[in-house]
Image 1 (tube, helix red, strand yellow):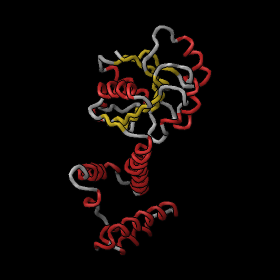
Image 2 (tube, rainbow, N blue to C red; image 1 turned 45 degrees about the vertical axis):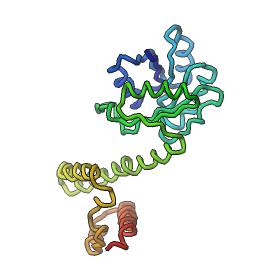
Image 3 (cartoon, rainbow, N blue to C red; image 1 turned 30 degrees about the vertical axis):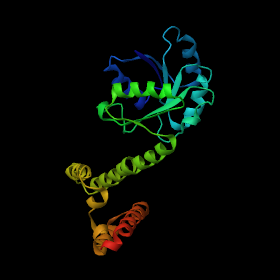
Image 4 (cartoon, helix red, strand yellow; image 1 turned 90 degrees about the horizontal axis):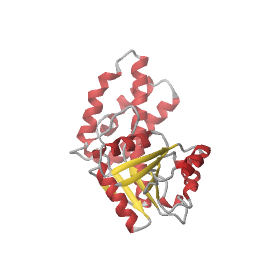
Length: 247
């Protein structure tokens, strides 16, 4: 039985707790508040339920300060960030990373078996311990270095966070024109489905892909603010540059 203490009470911590609760190989023995004063008190009271792994699931900027509370532990300490290197944890400790590559919200259920987990550790024994933990909750466990993981996280920001922001702009346009945003749901679903069997390059469609300058100009005239116009122009130019030689 692998005993785990979760440090933090946010989205990642909550989903890890739910996933672990479905296994018989892992037990969450503590969920610790990451605020400095609460964390110090909790660590003094942890007693006999000493975990094998402390999982720090806090914001990226908080990882260095929170991890200092564990600088003298002999147990494995890992964080869950995609962009923070493993070496952000104190030098002398047993350290690692377990990064779930998924957008996570507390209110939404996620099948963690489908979530890719990126693991890394400073010692081979600890890497094996993380692999056992990962394989208990996910069918997709990958050993990924900090150097590779930061690029993976960058790619994730483009395909998820930036895409979701574009959904927000589309939703606002629909709202302004009293159109139901739900009309775009089938399009969003089909766009995501296509890249399972087509490369994003081959799946690209739209006026910029066709270099349909008249349509693009009409779209620009419909946009009400300069930020959206700039974004439309930058994205269209990027698409045109990517496909210009093929038009």
